[in-house]
Each structure stands twice: as C-alpha cells, then as structure tokens.
Length: 318
Image (cartoon, rainbow, N blue to C red; front, side, top):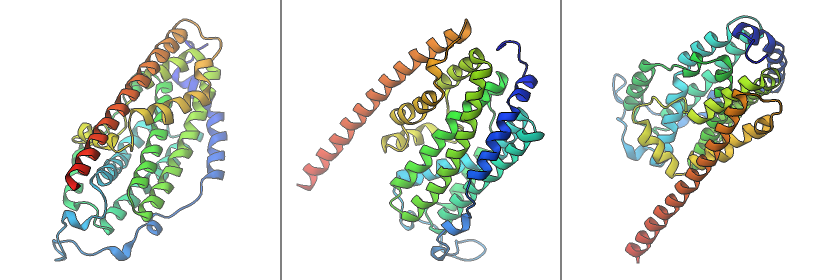
C-alpha cells in the first residue's frame, strides 16, 4: 500500500486526521497579543527623519549571544511568506488542509511582529543592520528541498523543525536575563509546540497508513536536517556561538528534539516494515548512534574550553 498511494491519495487519506487535529488545535490554542509583551515605554526615536538618537552597542541590555540568537530567530520568522508558499504548495488551500495552512501562517506571523517590536523598543539591536539582514535573507527566499521527494518528507520535516524552533526560542528567552523577553519567547514557544503536535500527529497517522514510506521520510529528514534559517548570512558562525552558549547544540538536538519525536511515534519500534522501510530504519539507527557520539564530543570539548576560560579569568583576577 505504501508504494501505491499517490500524493493526492495520501492527502485525501490524511484529511480527516487534519480536520480532527485542526479542531483540537483551535480548542487548545490560547489567544494572545504581541503588543502586550513589548515594553513600549522603553522606546525612543532613532536617528533619521525623526532626529532621534543613533543606536550604539551599549544601549542593549542583552549579551552578545542572546542578541545573536534573537536575531537568528527573528530572521527565521521573517521568511514566513516563503514558508507559506511552500506548505500551501505542498498541502493545498482547500478543505481542512487549506484552513490549517492559513491558521498556521496567521499564528506564525505574530512571532516576527512581537520579537521585532521587542528588539526595537528596548534598543537591543542595530535597527539598520537588522533591516539589511532581513532584506538579504528574505531576498534569498526559502525552498523546502523535501518537496522534491514526498509530502511525507515535508510532514516529517516540520514535525522535527517545529520542536527545534520551540526549543531555540525557549532557551533564548532563558539566557536573555530579561524577564520580559523570557515571557515573550515563552508565548512564541507555546505556539511552536502546538504546531509540532499537529504535524507529529499527522506523521503518526502516516505511519499507520504507509509505514515503509513514513520511515523512509523520517530517516531522510533526520539524517539531513537543517534549521529553516540556515540560509541566514553567516549562519554557521552564529550557530557555533549559539551552540557554545548551550542555546541549541547537538546534544539538545539529539535529546530534546529528535529522540522525543521518534519516541512519541514509536518509529524505531514500527512493525511490519519491509524492504526500503527496514533499510531506512537501519540507516536512522546508525545515524542516531553517530549523532549521540558527536554530541558527547562537542559537549566535552565545550566544557574543556569553558573550564580553560574560567581558569584564565581566575588567574588574571587573582
């Protein structure tokens, strides 16, 4: 059956699951307003046509890594028009699928609004550099490489990506040292978590319908996973800074994103796999073992570097 379902047939088979989970989402999601999480009273005019004060680094209360992480998170959210295009192309704009596409887009839209307003009101970032980075990033757009594979690849990707984004937002809030920022990003993370549950439930239904194809999609996605903001200028350097601060690293990716989704789906225990499904699971297990080893090496190396910095600081202060 896995190899006999066309994309159209699969979308039709999953539509009742979409409708059920859309109704669950609408009943669960809590309305919130971005403007309530922005300290507007801290805002002042910038230089330019209003003749305000030019931005300078010392105006920001955020650490360098918190600022970097917030900028990466914001630029990622900024590419929403491309994301909407991709999922509308993948799922369609009719029926329950279309209702979800537009609801998801509307909820995601407030994330960028809220984060940008917070950053500008608190003078946390250089507004000129931020706008230029937005133009560059959005100018490149975003293409879901998995559309060239199957709809299942797309569903698998967003199942992991939404959780990864939730973790990134939540940990960024925690290191910000600003209760307002932490509270704001907790609201954003709550949205992302509900989105993850929606997609994960679809993926679970796909495992029941087409287990071999679902396993292939999950294996391919996990083994080649990239964050949606990977096209951000200097993303590699920024990712290292974020990882070194423990906001999002290989250990977090393995322990808090990949494994929880796989465990919930019982993917590694899926019965009845044949042929390519079994091969995909074997590839996934081998990859997870290697990812775990890489994560351990990274955290050990980071601990050594941080211990060295602490020792040098203690020696210099003594």
